[in-house]
Image (cartoon, rainbow, N blue to C red):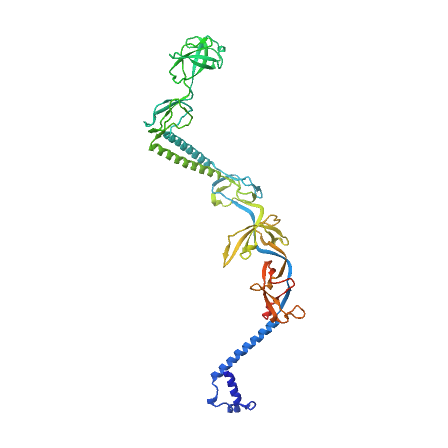
Length: 540
């Protein structure tokens, strides 16, 4: 406003067309000093005029650019949309194993060569194990001794029957105090007694197995029934110089006989010579191994017992402590024995996987120095090849196990291989605010592909068929598209005549293959969408 007033004032003072053209004249026409506008006011007015002129110029340029912007009109069509996720990675075998050892020694056997197919568990190397075998033997002896000590300790605490049979005598009772070596009970294997009788001047053929016999024992008035269980093959000379036959007779012990008794017998019409000694069956006396108090002895004379059956307890703190110490010794010895056996197994190196021998670095006769020797051999499982591809967090939801994958390699131009998504890991890696997830792809028919090759992979995800689509570039921020309103298009129907009549329309998006995107609502088949040429709009 001040600038306009100043301009008017000047125009009123110096009539248009009357200003002098000479320097002298111009000096004459200058305003008096008191009536001139200040220099600062003139500069400020000029600055305002420049700003206003710039704004007007920019508005004119903007309208020109908008009017001259180029739009590409694209019809909304129906087509199939296949969701894909692409990436790259390096091929690796299905499994790989570096054969190594912690054992030092000389290799005795290495029955395989490079390129051989080996099965899991196949022998690869055998190392000299002489010292290890000696260690195993020593450990085994120590374990056996420890178990023997444990049995003795348990026997001291809980005496057992050494044979199966019948308790013939009981020498102690509950509550008795005993010391090591005290007799506890006598056990006989059975009630049967046997006596060997001599029959002078009688041939062995006169007797037979199972023949009945009448036995007279000691001074007992009654006889006992017996049966012949053995007959000599021939006659022999007896102690009295007479020749005769030997016959063994078994009788049932009525419970009072022992090996201190004598007996004679009659078999058929023959009687034995003299008195023969009664033989007791196998017997055993149980002694206390340790000292203590007898408890739990409930067996009586005549009671049957099984071999190993506990007869009683010799209670004492020393006996119980001895059992516990012996038990711990057995555990320690067994652990040492097991460790020695495991160590011996280490001298035999077997293949942990089935596969192909890729590299063999050591052979029979070579010496290895434990871990310092590094890898002895390298085995690849080539049943399939695998590639691990990192997938962005925005795309990982499109990937599932079992999806087909197209594989290409720069080393094999023109060839395409098929793979399958084997695993989608949830163990993501975040870098600079972006997370990727490893996806494992298996390639069964890998042809000329080899481990170590770099490949490109395209995961073929879900395909939606015959859906409304627009180019992905037609969708703007906020999921909107540009559509021509009434009067926006030129007569040719392809170019935009009036950009001011272009409308922005919200749409709902579906699947996308990166080039086209599905529209589930907001557009209909036959509609047209506009794509602004950003380069032209920016004056490029």
